[in-house]
Image (cartoon, rainbow, N blue to C red; front, top):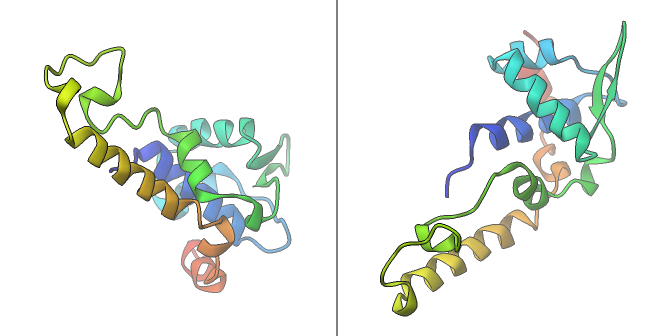
Length: 145
């Protein structure tokens, strides 16, 4: 299973704003600089994170973004589910476009579905708070640029 860059960037944005103290605001520009990621990509990511209720956007001069809830309420499995387009590990996972001739008797499909469920089972046990246990170390790397 490989995450898209979009999901990777989404998780990194959440970690960045979560590492800030006392709900301090962050700008897309500073996040872009810290990670070396395109500002345009981050604008799309932050827009979607806002739509999903993960971050709060404050417009205008002195504006920025911050977490909309406490890190312990942001489940990593849920974030991944909301930011990925699909989880079609193999063709037969997509009923609309499946043309695999062995689908009716294939055991691989069940094995891969079980693996995907295990993947999410692990992700579902973690929250953003778990990713921020080394908040000071993250801040030392991210906020010093």
